[in-house]
Length: 574
Image 1 (cartoon, rainbow, N blue to C red):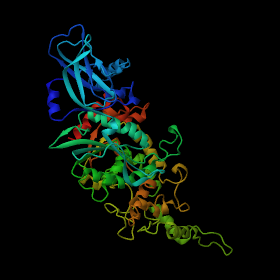
Image 2: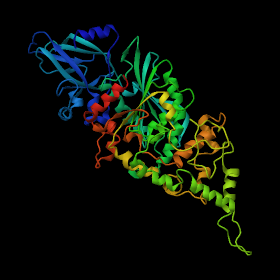
Image 3: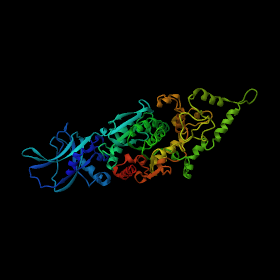
Image 4: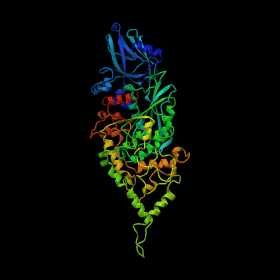
């Protein structure tokens, strides 16, 4: 507290911060809720009957705050593991007080002194440093600093695109927490969570953790950060439905419905694009997404009118096929070994398997025995024709062809209706290639990501086609899963509020999520030439004993362990 605080007050620039999250008290993550207060002592010593106190006069209700001497200097207590542990241990002692008389400071010599301060409830506008005369019970103001301390949800805006009562997205997003984005805000950072995250968890943990950590490494997230000419900052979280399951507690559900959530991610791009366009009006918009949340954003970028809406898009460990960004993606020998065997089982590369079956179905082979001898059996052909005549969405054009799957030649981006009778949809390769011209895209990857290296490939090879119990069934001329897939009915038009037909887009999403397996590794495991790739492996690690942490390290590990990773994100947005 010194003359700089007076200057800040004159400019209307108080110190802005958030109240402590009680769920993090006593945990290493709770250190992010403690800010530094620096006191510069210039004058003479106090009399024995005088005390130095820190107060928030006039605050209502009476503020509850804590003050503790800092371990180390600067941000050591956040970015240095040893200092973090030392600081956390010191905070186990009772440090909070609720008193109009304020907090008494220890004796201070001439020079600078740093303390940590946290507020459980601090709704005043000024911290004052005062001398308190014990005999007369009077205060003398020494210095003051303007402050603006709010609950975190008063700083952070959250939208949801979840459709109540379902695992599907809504047609439009709704603001569910925090303020409307203020008019003076010109820099918005948008956060999207990944797979298997509930809305409650996103709001309580994922969004606050990213928000606080970006703040501490110097990326503007608060609307008090910035200036009148360039505008002020704000942060928005978007929750989407990526956690379909049985509804059972614990890990039983985890990972079981990944193909369904791939489809929900592709769907969610529709309402998310609406939110992004609204947020970007007259503003600079940057996006960070984790895991499958990156598919949501890439789907959003494919929606009409999205070119230039997002300035920079940082993908962290994206759970997306790496070949989705490049129609000429060069597959490595390892990828051909790990992924192509499954694709070949289902007709890759030339659909010869399906063509042979189609020829047999049309010829009635194999014949069935009849009284006069073997006769053609058209049962399977008639079943296929009935599905396309009676069960398929009548608005879908073109209809799927039994013998044409991997050989489909997709137009750059499928429109609501196809352009010819020949299907123009197809597998993952090149799906998101057009997005590289709509935004600056960065792939922050971890070569040791055990989730993307072990579980994601299993989903691609075991649950595609996504038929039967847990998607472990197969597709053939008897099942004919390819005809209808899942989520391709006319009811899916709700996503566009029944404004015309979008059946061709829905069918393409269904082919990707429910039938086509990836032929490449996940984007979040290695550099991808089509986008700017940044290696975060040193912070992600490769621990087999903690596989989840190798994928969710940016929020799951202590800030001191990933400080450099967040500095990298900060620099990507400059």
